Amino acid sequence: ARAQACAAVEKALAALTPMSQEFEPLQRASESMFRVYQVQQELMGLPAPLVSSSRVFIGRFAALVTIGWPHSQVRDSHAVFLFNDCIVLGQKTVETGARFEYRARMDLGSYSTSRRSELTVTVHMEEVTWAFHTPSPDAADRLFDCFRAVIADLADHPTDDDDDAPGPPGPAGPPHLGRVGSNLSKGGGD
Image (cartoon, rainbow, N blue to C red; front, side):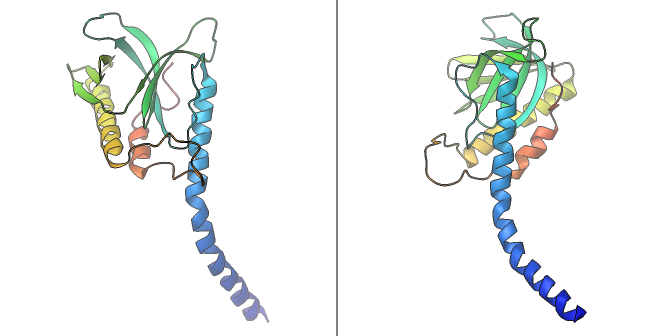
C-alpha cells in the first residue's frame, strides 16, 4: 500500500511540474513589476508612473551627475535608478527624508555611452548628454559595462510600453540584466 501511495504522489508531482514551470515567467514578471513599483514609491514628484509591464529595474547607485555636459559643469550628487529602458535621477533633500525627490529622466530608446576619462562615463541621447562621475576607475568600468549591456539588450529586445495590450505581461527581462544589476548597489546610493 505504501509503494502505491508513493507512486501516486510521484505521478501527481510529475503532472504538476510542467504546470509550475508555466507560472515561473509570470512570477518573475510580477516580482519585477513590484520592484519597479517599490522604486516608484521611493521617488516623490514623478511626472508619470514608472510601472510598466516591460520595465525592469536593474539597480540604484550614487553618482555625481552633470546634465547637459559638456556645456554645463554643475555636478550634483544623485541617486541614479537604472532600468532596462530609462534612467531616473533622484535627490535626497531635508524635506524628503528617506525618500528621493525626482530630478530628471532619460528614456533610452537609441542612445550611446562612452568613457570620457578614467572616472567619467557619459550617456548621450539625442540632444542631451549626462556625465556620471564615479569615485574610482573600477566603478566607472562597472557602470560603463552595465550601460553597454542595456544597449545590447535594447537592440535584442526592444521594449513595448503598450500596457493596454491583451494578455499577461511578458517575462521580467533577459537573465543577463540581473547579473548586470548585481554589479550595481541596489540598496546603496543615497
